[in-house]
Length: 175
Image 1 (tube, one colour):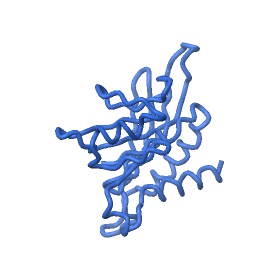
Image 2 (cartoon, one colour):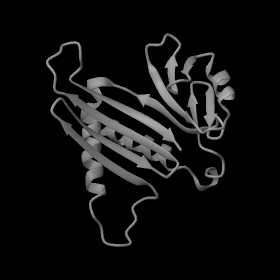
Image 3 (spheres, one colour):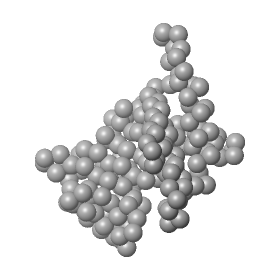
Image 4 (cartoon, helix red, strand yellow):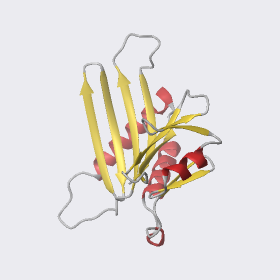
């Protein structure tokens, strides 16, 4: 568990804090072998995704070829250039909940109020909790202003055996 948590934190920090020399190029995400960059025209993106994914123009969703799994979402400006892309990096179901909960608790300590002027990193860390009668979740977002990694653990309060009682997900977004 500790090794998984350390690896997850290392991956999040590595992805969320790009090197200074990399900040001049537009951020990009890779859907398999298709690399998408902010500002890219929609037609180029459709062509790049066509081999392995289905792009649904009406919603901006990127689906697996068989249409069963959403791999991400894209948003375009009025001139049909990419302005936001999100990609699901991991969705491990109930088995990942303890890891996300442990990471949430660790980051809650890191983000506790500090004396003025203390800076722990060049990233923003946003911790969110939601509690509804039938659903609760805890989410962690780490952002450097252009890349955001969100890790979420969700719990359903349901007696429906077809629905999992909990799930996790990791999403990367560029803006």
